[in-house]
Each structure stands twice: as C-alpha cells, then as structure tokens.
Length: 459
Image (cartoon, rainbow, N blue to C red; front, top):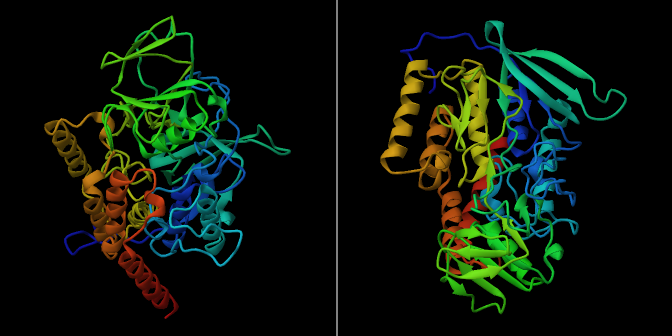
C-alpha cells in the first residue's frame, strides 16, 4: 500500500540489492529497482540477457531431465516456437513491443522467439541495464546472515577467473531465475520395465528425432499441441494422452492420418505397450512428456522458511514476499496463466517501492493471515497445491491490485481483451489462431495507448 497518515513515516532509503537472473523478469526488476534509487547487481549464469528466450540447439545429457548430475540447459525453446500472446499485449507497459522497420525483424502479431529476444535486447540497451549485469556468474548459495543481510556466494563460469568463488553481502535479494528449466514428469506405472525411450519437451528442439517412430505425447498445453503437429509431420504415428481435450474429441483426428487422442496412460509394459484408460493399447517407441516444470531454487537457503511443496512456493504474500523474510527476500515471475512481462513490471515496481520505504507492507502477522486465507480458499474450491500460482480468472484482479499498491493506472482493458480474444480463438482454431487475428479495434486501442504514453514521457 502507499504510505498513509495512519503509518509512521519512514525515511526513504537506498538498498544494495541482488537480482538473480537476467531474463525478462530480472531485466525489468533491475530497471525498476534502479529507478527507485537502489544499487543493483544482476547475476546471470549465461553470456547474454534474455533467460529462457535465448534459444540453443543444445539439449541436456538426460533427455527426460531426471538425472541430478546431468548437463543442464536453461532454455526450453524449440526452433519453431512462436508467442501465444499478441505482441502488443505481451510487451512492458512503458516499452511497447511493436514491429520494427527492419527486414531482419519479425513483424508478425505472434512473432517467433528470436524477435522476443531482440525486443529484450532493445529494452536492455534503452535502459542501460547491461551495465548492471555480471554475465557468466552463477549464484551458488543465498543465505540469511546477521542483521537482515543476505550473503551470496557466486562463481565465475568462464574466463581467466573461471571457478573463482566470491562472497558478498546484500541488503535484499530478488529471485528472477525463471521456472521453465526443471522438468515435471508424469508418473507412469511400469515405466522402469518399459523398453522405449523418454524425453521431456524441455529437450525438444525439432521433430527429426521422431521420424518414422510411434510417439506417445503426454500433455494438452498450447506448446504440447504445437509440438504434436510438428511431430505428426515426420512420425509414423502420434498418440496424445491428456486429462481433457481443448478442442475436438478423443480418437482419430480428422485432419491427420497418423494422430490419435486418448485419455491418460493407465500403465506401460515391458513388451513396449502403452495402455490408456479407455482400454486402447499402442506399441510405442518413445514417450514425450509435455508436462510442465517445477519451481527450483537450489541456491536458496532459508532454514525451511520458504519451501517448494507440490510446486507451491510458500508461504508467499501475493506470490512475492515470504511473510517472515519480507521485504529482504522476494520473487518475481512465479504466477502462470498470466500476461508475464507487464506483471513482472508491476511486481518489481512494488518491490522497489517497498524496499525504499515509499510503500508499506502490512504486518508480518497480517501477511501470514492473508496467505493462510488464500490457501484455505484454494482448498475450499478443491484446487490442487500445484495450481497455487495459476492466476487464470484472477489475472486482472491481481494486476490491478499490484497497480493500486504502486499508485499506477489499472491494467489496460485492451490488453486484457486481447488476451481473452486469443484464448477464445485458440479454442476455436487451435492450429491457425496466430494467423487469423480479427479484433483490429483492440490493436488500434493499443496503439492509441502507446502514442499517449510516449507523448507523456516526452512532456
């Protein structure tokens, strides 16, 4: 909340803050913290900004992603990936994601991943964020020390000082390390005896490894369907296993001669068979898990104050602050089924203001009470723990709440309407929604907003 007459005024302070990760969340967090007057250091284990938007053809040594000692790859991008949110709605609120007059850029409303990375690079240059980033520097450990300070141990990953470890003290830490790196894998009875191969979509780059194979794909996210269409172009057969169907029905898919949809897998057997809950059986070569990711903070030591339980990071006040460690520890970017970049912007703006004492938090007891009430409401509605950070229908309410705490304008209606039109279009035309944008009035509203905002900045 903004400081009110009921709160004793606190002096505005500047803090020394560590930001972990230079993806979209870390970049806008660094900017907002700097704008608020804080001293910022961004730790980035890679050699450039962009986080998950930095594509690499490299994959991990363990295709399923379960071996703890595997060589890891941060990005989960596949070669053909395009955004599933219109660029106008996707961009930061004060730095529009508009097409560039450059033949090397992707002007499409739903651009490919390279265009998103270039947008983040543009954003970084515009606000000189790269000056704050330590590249190829891995955070090994973050732990609370005396007097509400945090000690960060980092390690150089290249160069003359490769392997060198450094301990530093910070007033606060903002965790922005993303959540598309540690695979979640479906539990399948009999899998240890099943002779086929397994892969998680984290290690999918293109369909070629599936040529002439019988493939079972688990999942029903938009990316799962994107991948299934690609694989269908080269595979002998592809069988999609999902709890629910976004569009169409179970059974043979009319648009393909080699694609079937099934309910979930019942079990698998050592003869190579995959048995589905509807009684159908397939002899498969490979199971591809498009089953999402785990929140993963191997560097963070909080003495059990913050835990990850069935993909619930908690306890967290408003998905950001651990009640017992606020505001010195915070997280940006945990919620999903969201419009991420503008949400990162509001979350980090709030964090920056709280750290400077310009905004005040409720008491620790009130924060914890809010978290417990939230968890209780999820339980009442039968929402599994793993959906704790799913915004869904609460997207607008959450972002508007953050905006109100920061004294910012509410979430733009056109932005939300673009998001909803896209969802509706996906349900109706899952294969072609990116090419069939009809809500041109929302595009005009977006550009009117961009022009207004730009003129206000100039004045």
